[in-house]
Length: 313
Image (cartoon, rainbow, N blue to C red; front, side, top):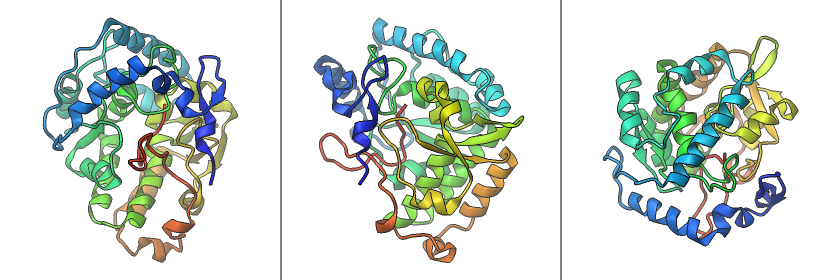
């Protein structure tokens, strides 16, 4: 098993260490604050309004710093469609917005809203809810000492990365396609396959454009570190068999990315794989069973399970 926990940046200078060394885990005051916010998700029903959070000035400052850094890092590194969507995304630059503020505007554009997550979301719920126009999003802000890297998704990743996608009807339909496929199956094996394809496309997807690889995945869009090292990434041609067996790098930068030839190629690929996806798809395509696939998911600190379908930033 790959020790992904040893691959996490834990200082602003980029030193690698175990995730528990990251101030987001090591700072007890921060952890208490994050836990109070995540506790709001207890018993939350998909589609119910998210309770408001009173953000601190430090959290607003972290939001502003990250968005400013990402604006620079995205320049020349993201594809045209994403750059255009980012201009339209209803995400304010000066303060941390509430779920309802951004979600209501997304709904007017594409029918999507944010629904509350506390962190770990099982694949069936996380992926399946997309069919009904709901994307699970957290409300806490990453640690101010490490504003440009967090080992877990935060409100910046969800609102900026996925909010950029979900304001665009073309991308929003791909999310619904993922959700419809997930809603048709129940086994961990089938949901894992969908999650891997989602991971390497809508989270960490790359497209060739103008003779260069450009980012379109939400995790890349909201990760300053990933974007800054994008030119050094191992970008490989799209290969479903490779993706199905490849270990995830959940805590740390992705060592391997997969590129489609165009966004039309992405649409054809996802629809071709997902439109008729069912419990027999794995065998029909000759893909390995769950127990023979590479490690995915980072164990939760309390041992509660794998954080499937959600990236680090």
